[in-house]
Length: 537
Image 1 (cartoon, rainbow, N blue to C red):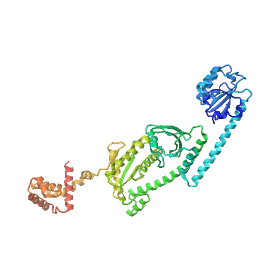
Image 2 (image 1 turned 90 degrees about the vertical axis):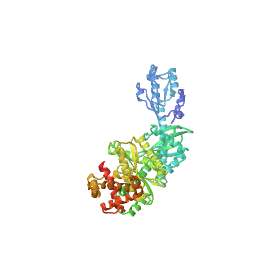
Image 3 (image 1 turned 135 degrees about the vertical axis):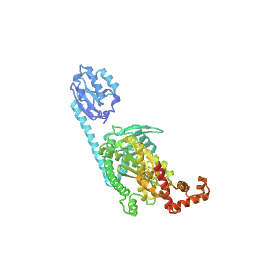
Image 4 (image 1 turned 60 degrees about the horizontal axis):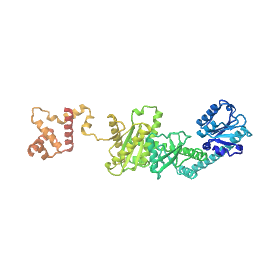
């Protein structure tokens, strides 16, 4: 309560305010009586001190020091009983109290200091008792609403009604958990996080500030603390610290909301675990039939005929070097950040986790090129938030698109492959697109001895060095295959007549013993020529 309200008690009848009128709005939590010489060491915040000033009757310097100390300690005021040891309050003390806005009270000699302390404390305790009873009633009211299944929004609406101010529930990124019309305001709030403004307050604190833009908005945040993260009750308006009733009401609402959020989080974690188990079994080939994949996929909103694009994200190896518990906690935070972004993405995105990676499945409604830039923008936004909030480097690999759900396993491997190559190149916080391997890259994955044997087996009929025309025939055959078996184009490139090409190809068929019109044979020969280039290289 305010000092001005306390002074309305009958016990303060005859009390005169001699200085510090500007400080009458100071909060009073307790009243104390003290005449010890070391009184300064026992001062408390929001305390009204009454004294006979016995030790200051001939020590003005100590009295002035007491006033300064009380201001530093944010005390409520100082009451001095005059006409006993101190005949009147020194003008120097009055001037200092006025300068520092500390209320200085002259107490009448006939009033007992003990009565002042006892009746003041009794009055304060009565008020606190009433506040506690009201808080318990409000807490019970909010709890009954939750038990009756009305949910968090009902509590928020009630708080808004009681405070006569708009109230919203924000997540740990200061963004609303529901769709509202104040997107600009909350974008301003979120932007403060990227400018280093810290909102990680203690569970007993509130924060009030004004956002300056086209319109000025005063915002008061009350933290709603659960076991792993903060939410906030956001009041669009100013809640003074002296309005204890309103603050207690909001805190009771915060407590009830916190328990409901923990319950919702437990259900969410169970659902998340089931989803991740499905995806792990899916990509590991545990399901025996396509019908089983399609049936299980429907449980998680996945459609069998839908085209999907897969992105796999992973924290850098340097950022993983910490205790398991700390890493797991931060991984949960990062998951929540990604989840928040994908939920507000225009295109539908499914989120899974597996082997310390984050998997995003994007539903394609049009061509890949039409969705490429928006999807990459989403991933960059996620990277930025993870970097700012958690100082972690998050990188992504993106696959080619899958024509249907059953092909997602291939897309997942492509995204993992792109992520691997990005890491091998030494990049940090990158987004790597999957590049299909070219034939030479695939051939390099085969042991040299097997490549050499395949090449020798294919061209063993052309190894007779006494036959000088063999090299000419091989060159003609190579050009013929490169031109997709076009006779005219082959003749043009070799600067020979078309009939010459036909003659040479017929000779090749005699040596090989098989027709060049067979697709398997032409494929074998083309691979052999590719292998020849690798071997010679």
